[in-house]
Length: 124
Image (tube, rainbow, N blue to C red; front, side, top):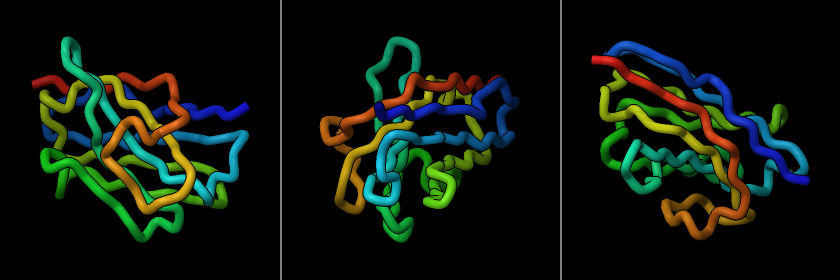
């Protein structure tokens, strides 16, 4: 079965950095769009970034542009989210997700597979 396993979350001070990883199994990774979403306490889950199958097509939500970078390594079946200049408002559970085909999307309904999430906490 398909599994997406996130790692790399933790507690960091404002201005710091974290690198999230999501290891995928049970699917032909190179055929899937990979995305990162997040859910803060009391808020709905929101799109963060997505990357197309080749890695050449990326999308970001406005609040993270210039601070976060999504990348993928198809040989390792892994997608990454490098998060720099972190702010307290980035505190959330971060989820990776996948859907087949396309170049990327911020539309949650398109994503078929989801990980369990990893907590990111940014202290002020």
